[in-house]
Structures are given as structure tokens and as C-alpha cells.
Length: 188
Image 1: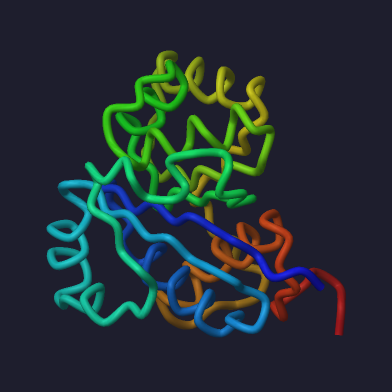
Image 2: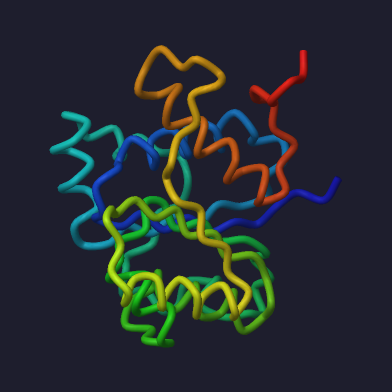
């Protein structure tokens, strides 16, 4: 199996637990990964600290790029990163991606992924959704992106916040093409 080159954008939307579980899962799947490029928005670390009560993002082992580093390899399609996950994805970031506004590395990388016809997964968490949000999601979907609402499932009977968040993240990793051992409905 070819190892994956993946971009992860973490924005300041509520739902830092999803980003933490994603980082943990990617570490568990490291034998399937060639490279992970990580970008935080301005508010992502602040929300992480507030919601999770720690600065564990400082110990993430993947290379982190500044949000204004347009020299990052995945700012160009020639680097051949095949997947990007934005988790959690704020509605502001989603709107900028939908309208091609590449004002930081997260939105530029998403623009590259879409123009190269590669896999873009946006893990959105806001509720309720306005018509503007829905129209932006439709635009991204029509452009080839995948909207992954952070709507956890309960049939695996999760007993912690991490397990509950994993029901969303494991589905996201499935969509990204990882071989992922997780609870499957009606499978032993």
C-alpha cells in the first residue's frame, strides 16, 4: 500500500476534542503515512486550551506550518498531497474555501486540493446551520469536497468524550482511505 501524504488544518471552531482524537488516530496509523503537514488557525490553540484544559498540541510530532507560510510544500499541487482534513472546520473557513479565498495556508491548501481533484474532508461542528452555511457546503460538495458533520454515533456505546469523538474521526479516516480498525455496524 502506498503511504499517504496528508494535510491537517485545525481551526478555532468549537470541537477541539475532534482534533485531538484525529491526531491520536493518525499516530496509531503512522505505518500508513508518509507525511503529515499540520496547520493551526489563529484561534485553534486558544480553543484547544479552553476546551481541553491543556496544551497537548505542543507535543504533536508532525511538522507544523505557520498559517502564513505559503512556501509549505502543500501550497502547490506539485507536492502531491492527496488528502486534506480540516478538523474542526469553522464556518468562516468553510466559507473562504467555498469561495476560493486563499488568505492563509489552510484555505490555500484546500484550494489546491480541490483544483487538483484530490480529497478534501471538512469536519464541521456548528449548529444550527444558516442557509449561507448550507449553500457554502453545497458549493464545496459540487467542487468535490466532502462535508463530514461532527455528528457522533451512539451504537458503539461510547463511554468517554474521546470514544464519542472517535465515532466521527474514524468515519473521517475511512473516507480518507485509511485502513482503520473501528466499530462497524453489525460486524463482529
